Length: 211
Image (cartoon, rainbow, N blue to C red; front, top):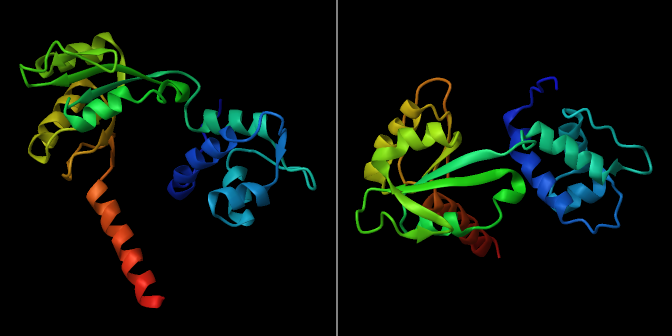
């Protein structure tokens, strides 16, 4: 398949489109850009522009084929084969992530969960045994781990990221409340719950002031 160059802003919206299509009734064969735009909270022109990067062209008066568009989105997002995922941090957040059953449907396989706490190592969590972080490099290689998740305290995040990078992992999702540094060629996505809450309080405050 030819590599598609897609703007970052569009990439961030593709998973939303894919999830929205997954919520469509099985009997719905087509969807218009207007309907999809209404579901995701965008305008139809933006939806059409985003989908055009995939080579998807809707039929005037008919729209897009739901099944075909889902295939296009999955291919663009690289979801056509499974990816091994390793979580570091078996605390509350790590436990919640390992117990979440929705990853496999999107092509992600929870391959390992690791920690440094001797009291946790060997326990079962989400169908996986908690393993010692000392074995991270071996586990990444043997289980073909492609994505690392950091669910540790902030003080440990950079060390864990360094370990992932050294082991050859080039895609990292960081839940720790810390900004980490990585070399060129490694992609880190940060999920900061406190920042998201502050954004919500901003809107809450301004909506109350306007009301």
